[in-house]
Length: 113
Image (tube, rainbow, N blue to C red; front, side):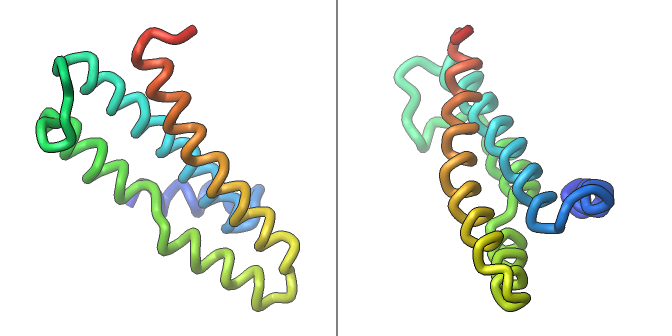
């Protein structure tokens, strides 16, 4: 519901693909921050040992907040509308920026800056 509400708000100024880009980038940053906080709380963290609050919030809530399906739909709609360049920029930008935002969030959570 939060993603849908923010998408409606952001599409007043952006194309829906741009709104999803912003939401996915912000969600990726928050996932990185959450994982970094979880990692700092559990020594020798292994994937199966993630704290339950992180699993619920990070993978549950933020996993639903960020969205691959809506991202793919928006890119497809741009492509079908003849906006191939915009579709490629949005797709490439998301695939590059979202992992970088997650890494940056992790960096910040672990004491960077």
